[in-house]
Length: 106
Image (cartoon, rainbow, N blue to C red):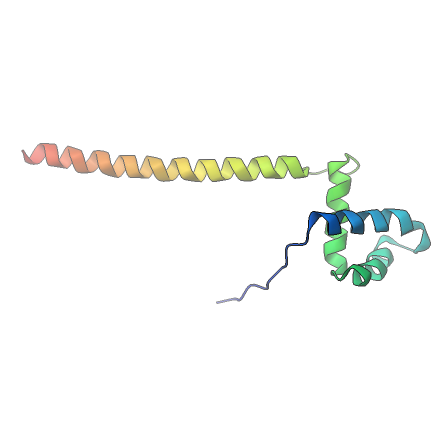
C-alpha cells in the first residue's frame, strides 16, 4: 500500500500573493522556473506549487488553455451529484427487488 503525502491547503491570500509576486518580478529572472525557485522559499511553499498556482491564474484570466477554477468546481459538483444519484438508484433497485420477492411469497 502506498502512503500519500500530506499536502497542506494554502490560504487563497497566499496563493494570490505568490502569483502577484511572480508576475511583478518575472522580468528579473532568466526563466519562469528560475522565478518560481527564487520566490517560492520566501513564501514557504514549493516551486511546483507556485508554478501550478500561476498556471491556474493564467487559465482563469483566459491567457492559457484549460479549465478555469469555476469550471473545475462545477465538474466536481456534477460528479458528486452523479455519484449520489447512482447510489440512490441502486438503493431503489434493491428495495424494488426485495418488495417484488415479498409479493411473490404471499
